[in-house]
Length: 77
Image (cartoon, rainbow, N blue to C red):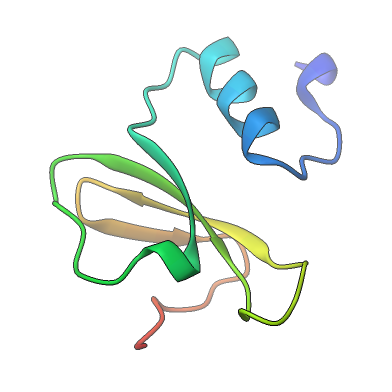
C-alpha cells in the first residue's frame, strides 16, 4: 500500500491509481467541462478549479453520490 502513497496531481495519475486498485472510472473531467447534470449510473473524477486558475482539487461522483476529500458539498454552479 505504501507504493500507492504519493502526491497525485494529474488525471493520468488518478487513472493509473484506479487501475491498480481495480476501480472503474468512466471519465476524468475538468469542472469547466461539466455543463449539465451527469448520468447517475457512472463514476467520474472531476477537478474543481476556477476557470482562470491552473490549480484545484479532485472530487468524485460515483453513481450519483458526491465525494470531496475537503468535506465540501457539490458545487452549485
